[in-house]
Image 1: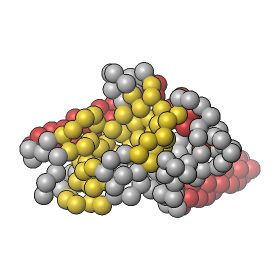
Image 2: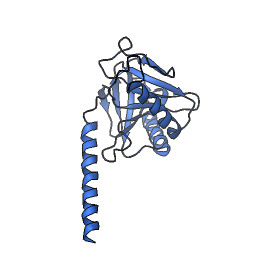
Image 3: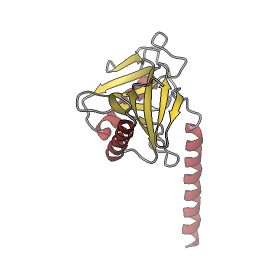
Image 4: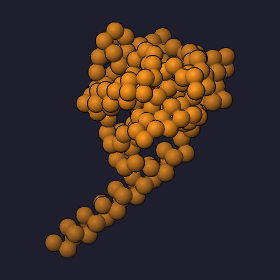
Length: 198
């Protein structure tokens, strides 16, 4: 019995240390830059300058169907699947636009890259593009994202913006900030482009 307790305690300690290390490591990951220009109790308005993204298109219509295959293709690109076999640092967040016509998944490229100096992907399904600057509304939630949570917070943000008479543009997008093996301190967001004149 004593051996079981010691073994369990050691395993628990290893787990806690691993999760703490993971949490601290994600805090050092470069994140896409934005400025908060307005804050409400449940959501905020941000200004995003233009950024360079690596993107894949997909016919997937659910978070589950898009996340796995999309991540593998984009990870292949940044982990050497490009001309020159260059390693590109992972950043946050991962962007996912899931809808019934054409879904996309994107990695934000580190800020020292642009379309001119980024190595060309070997996978033709990966495209490089520069976004336009934009204003978005964003709502946050924790834990592990699922189809249910994404739909719930999208509907919540939609209602909050309608109540404030803020006009939306395009689709709601999911932003994920953490690796799948991180269990604590997870951060998820739903964002949508808006018209903002204030």
